[in-house]
Length: 98
Image (cartoon, rainbow, N blue to C red):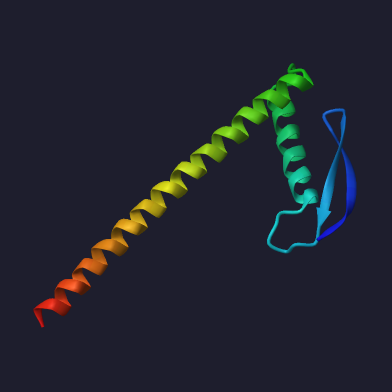
């Protein structure tokens, strides 16, 4: 359910995000806090970067992490499906031999 909009300032840009009271979703405050902490870390590590460079580097890192998690998830689901199919075959064999 939508409970309004909150405005945040990230790297000099004002961003409006919809609030939600859905307990299963990550809140906009959590997302912005995480992004801001990553921005702060990058600024400390590479003080000479412009804000646009920081934005692109963080976007690339977040995309890489997201794609890696998605790949791991798909591999885990495939492995689980294979294990379930193998177990089902064993159960079928046990039933047919008794």
